[in-house]
Each structure stands twice: as structure tokens, then as C-alpha cells.
Image (cartoon, rainbow, N blue to C red; front, side):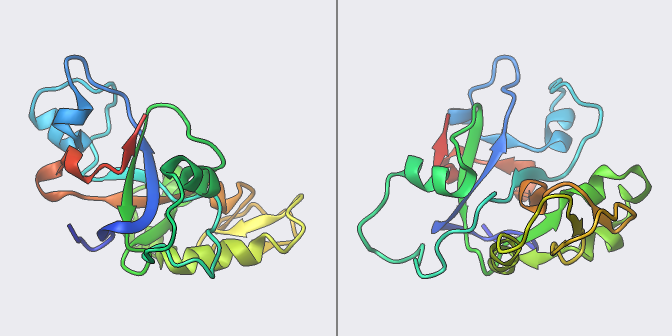
Length: 196
């Protein structure tokens, strides 16, 4: 599956989303559905906003740039991969694999700001490939991050405490998202790499 924002790849980078299983659903059989699709099917999923995307969290840490995720080298366990990218397995998570050069990351704090929530042009200012995102968070890690601010478009850290938009105090590597818009609003379970 490939859309404007994501390209699934069985040998790609793991990304994750947190799920709440609707009553009577089995995610291993039913897969994941967007809020828009669940609403159309009359399923109460506990939210009033009905997005056409499934929001996945971008990895918190960048993989070793010398390691090729598509190489057929001795495989790590999937749990080790998750630990390296997110620092923990988390609970109620679904993981899929994506091509980092054809998958795009957005700063989620733009969407969290009521003023800019529906302004797609402003949200698009933060659009970068997952590969570019990894380069930025590697560079950010070289700086003293205490009391720093993050530019929501570039994702770069600045040694100041400016929190006036487009700056924000929330660490960009913990507040970035990938928008998955599956055909028909349904990401089938055969795309899952791991589910806990």
C-alpha cells in the first residue's frame, strides 16, 4: 500500500499506534479502521472526531545510520527493534513497517494547537520523510536539550525557551506523527508486523 504519506514495506522501519479495541472486535481479524470508517459502520469508538487517518507515532529514536533496515543481515528480534526505536514495547500497540524514504512525518503539536488544527497548509510545513526526520533527531541529540525549544516546521532544537508558535517546548522526537490513510479507511491485519 502506498499513499501520499506512507508506503508500507515488509522490510522497512517499524512505526506504532495505540489502539482501543471496540467492543466485539478482534483486531487480529478485523484490522484497524479509521474513525471515519468506524462511524460509517455505526461503531462507537469513544471519540467525537472522526479522522480519515490512523495516527501512528514516529519513532522516538533514530536507528543506527550504518544499519540498512532492508539488508538481509542477521535479524534482531522484533522486540529489540521496537526497544531501539521507542525505548519500550508499550501496551495495546500495533506496529507496521514502512519505507523511510516514501513515508512522511509531521509535527503533531501543530495539530494539537486549536488555532492551527484544521489548517493543512500549516501542518504541511512540517512534512518531511522519515529518513529526514531521523537525521534531524540525530542532530538534535548532540545538543543540550534542557530548556530548549523545537521548531515545529524543521523539527530542529534551539537553545532557548521560546514557546511562541512555531516553537514549542515538547521534544519533537516524542511528538511527531505519521498519517496512515488506508483505502476504504481499513488497514487489514495482514499489514501488522507486531501487535501486543
